[in-house]
Length: 78
Image 1 (cartoon, helix red, strand yellow):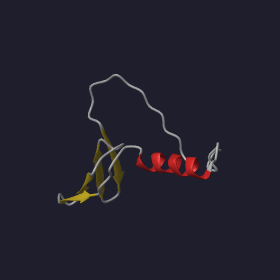
Image 2 (cartoon, rainbow, N blue to C red):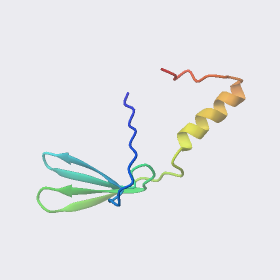
Image 3 (cartoon, rainbow, N blue to C red):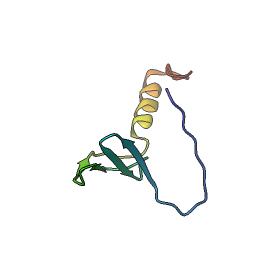
Image 4 (cartoon, rainbow, N blue to C red):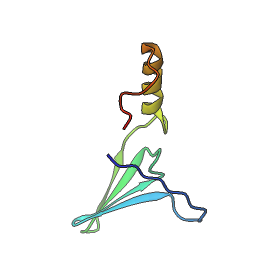
């Protein structure tokens, strides 16, 4: 499990870049994106599509299930 918290007031690109041995993955607006670009070391690239309805869709679903079950705390608390 990892918790990541970052706050800045800089005018930078809102993207996550993951570097690997054969290229890198660019994920714009990583907290709510619908696509990423895979840039290969040979110069080729590929767009990867992934639909995502909301930033917090999974969290909202989990909370609604807890309410329906009458739970007051999440079983996923650490």
